[in-house]
Image 1 (cartoon, rainbow, N blue to C red):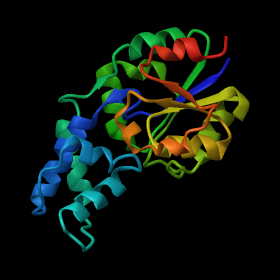
Image 2: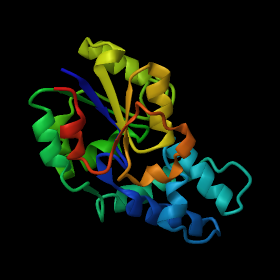
Image 3: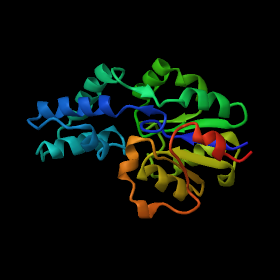
Image 4: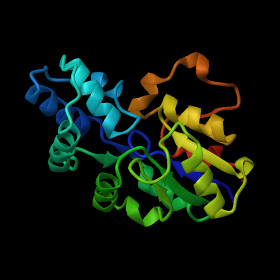
Length: 216
């Protein structure tokens, strides 16, 4: 059996609109403009702290704002379930692959927000081993979180796939020596430089493609 480690935002769930609405609200509070989904897409992926820094930079706020992160999380807490849903076919795909493979999750998103969305969408039943962006392990693209999941499941790099939609996920997979599986349907795919892709990278255009690409 292969260990399938999934990224969260842009891989399991389409959360970009709630993220961009939250980013816009924070930006406007600091005198900046509204931010559309494509703009925020280029800002997400490295965790909430980095996202907030980028929102403030876009708003022209140069100085550090110690309260901005907690304010963003407060705003996002109110908005995170407005539009966020699993990608079409995701629940059915996870149900099918979980019969023969092990599943885990590796995200740079904070734990509380991730768990709330997981419970709301029914994804929580698939993932018992999770690494979050605000836990003790370093965030992606550092491979330590991925290695911890592999060790916990007792599998080697050759038995592990990392499924994600962004450049951060590809870099993490390469650093750990596991099979990258790129979710081209995810909003983070626009951040990937096409020259960073290799011939042996698996690319899927919808969650169900995983069923035909996995080794038997």
